[in-house]
Image (cartoon, rainbow, N blue to C red; front, side, top):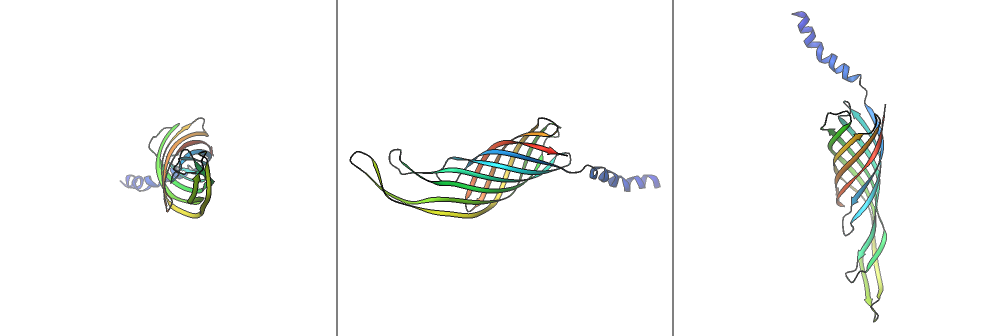
Length: 199
């Protein structure tokens, strides 16, 4: 009876100790995503550099991604196919995402997660453009006014990611992400990248 009680009390400690002996692992990676911008622009591009910490045989991962996103700044004038081109629209981004693997497989992972986001937005927005059309049908710009926007946006991101282990350390990732930021608005991103798992 005493031996059974001792096993009952010490059993969880032995199991916890066995799991504690598996140290957390790290990964570093790079990525490329197509990025939806607010306003009239279509898609932009975002480059990513990330560091991840893995727990529980990679079932749980917390990743911090630094990114740079940009898109052309074209504004349609509402006549023919005439546009005005402004300075490049830029985003300097930081996303921290905690994700959990729904598959228990050594080579495949399907993760869902979310976390906080902090983005810096820098761009010019078109306030007005005054123009006329001459007798030959050519566009004559009279005056244009852009106003600069430089602000910090905060919010959250949601991630769905598939990962395939090409080798024990080299990982291929495909993902889609949604970010909701104040006051910039929402962005949908999709892309992928590669990562290297450290020991």
